[in-house]
Length: 143
Image (cartoon, rainbow, N blue to C red; front, side, top):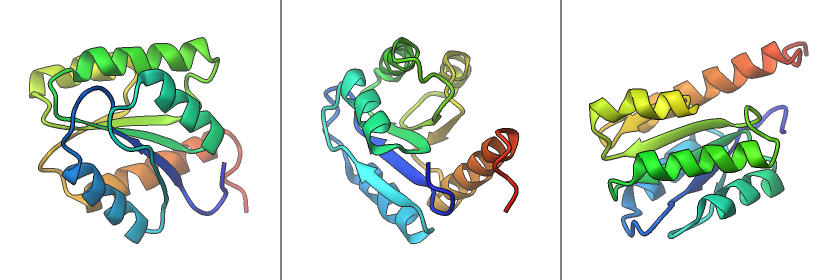
């Protein structure tokens, strides 16, 4: 993992073809100083996890507008466990997600859920704070 720049993998899992929000978040996070790896549309959970491992990212961010967010994120989290990397990545999800599904997603291990109306600034702030806290917990907080 990078010591200076936060590396974020953004993915569009499933059959969802709506990528405008993901592209806006990618640009905003890049402008906030992060490195972005965008995997594109129609990614499987296996592809997302493999890309996160190969790209050595800090964050896995998914954008889901299809309504299949709980099932897709369950599969992503299962693949992380199967690969032995559960807990290695900060996992966030955004999109048109009903409030009643947020606790379900968090119980799967998703760190935060952002509505489609969340500001990129709020997303960037959350990522920076969470990655910094994780780094400090691992003992990498010393200069």
